[in-house]
Length: 334
Image 1 (cartoon, one colour):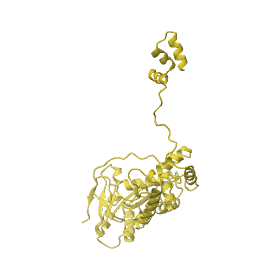
Image 2 (cartoon, helix red, strand yellow):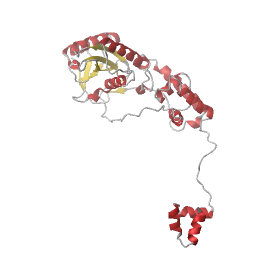
Image 3 (tube, one colour):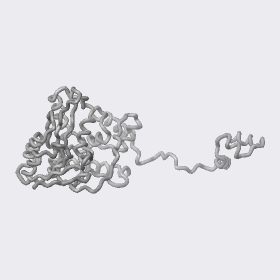
Image 4 (cartoon, helix red, strand yellow):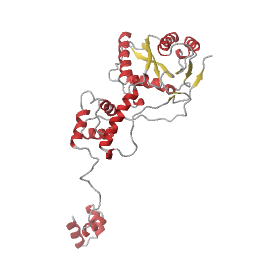
């Protein structure tokens, strides 16, 4: 290349023109002629933070196991930690898996919408419940089964549900009577129940029950479905599962599906809002044991490879306070 430029110059061409034709920067040509050394950092042979070949192979082996290969990577990482296996951070494991074309990546984060300061919050289970009704398709167009579902806002635990062929305030009242008796027995219950503005949610039967037990109730703003985000989120989780059918042949089929979903969601689902804990662990108070085990494993790995844990220290924990994310209207029972 240098010989070609020099030949062009000897034949009368200008240096800048010769460099343009060959696609070379004139300053680079001059540097090459001076034989100046390249001072860029380049590839470092010895890097103390790099994973060893054995560690890389272990990541691939663990994350391609049958029970983990189809899970989001952060969920699989948490499950491995619960088994006492920690090799590297989730982001490092993700880079390794992408490099080996395994297709296990994190689900794209949802767009976060900032809202005004919430008015109500919970610092433990059975302080705030959210509930809603969702429609489940039947085999007949226009016919639905109606799932009534109550979720604890703090623990995300499903405390009650029922399935019916219609929306009715009396059916909602029966569900709450049973659920309150199970989790909040007695009168003068210190509980807030949040729902949207649907007819069953504002029914006289349900209002009468809340007044009798001194339960406070709140409702979303009109035409603002995301004011009941906790209930909407659990329905989205249910209907986005691979096993969710296009429709249900009978109400018994729908009921069997809901039974299996509730059991999975309460006891097995590692909830991202709970730092990958199952709702049952938080609702019944044994979540700290799981968090302590994870943090101890993380600390041991940090002691073995401190160079891999720069910046802020990671600890598994849950929020002490969970708040309703949107402005709501409170209606206290008389």
